[in-house]
Image (cartoon, rainbow, N blue to C red; front, side):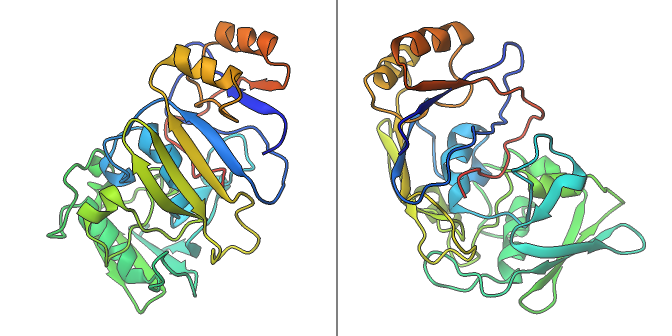
Length: 288
């Protein structure tokens, strides 16, 4: 990792589940060590409610679309392709069709197809027998009537009534596409994705590890060899760990401004960032 280390600071009164990391230098290789505030119940983004799962797992997955990570504000005009190369509404504005990127594979080598998209949303809407044990954002999809696939690379979402804003829900970091061939139970403990990082291991109250996906379908990514999240629930203990050089980055928005100023005074290499937050849902991962 580069010599500078990062402290992410919560702006008073603006704490949400959103985050954006500072701009790291584009260097190849190395392990990023992040101090994580919590031991998540599982590794399944769709079954958990907070950034404690979403942050370490977003890099394991892809969305259909995502908010452009280069933009400071999330809005519909900043939605860019991810697993979907393009999308279009029909004349009634009740059918949204995605054209999917060809040649994408899951981490276990199986091909990604429109069937995986259909399965994911069937689970979210309770239409799949292997549905989610917990579904904290199921209400997001109450306007979804059906998901229709045409071949391996086209999928249409049929809505009960027009809802242009639904594209923002697809772009959220809470909305990855899951594989149809892996059970929801297995996704809680050993998630399989299409993303730039592969899940390696989760040891409750100790760490979460992901490693570089050498076959990632976006050329040249990721830059890192892996990310290791050390779970330290105590803020004071996390501060001491950072001062001792045991972390490259603090958990986003977990430290107050006075704490960060104190850390800066004690660690000359620390770089403190105070992001002003602009929305309430986690964005697609900056680490891809």
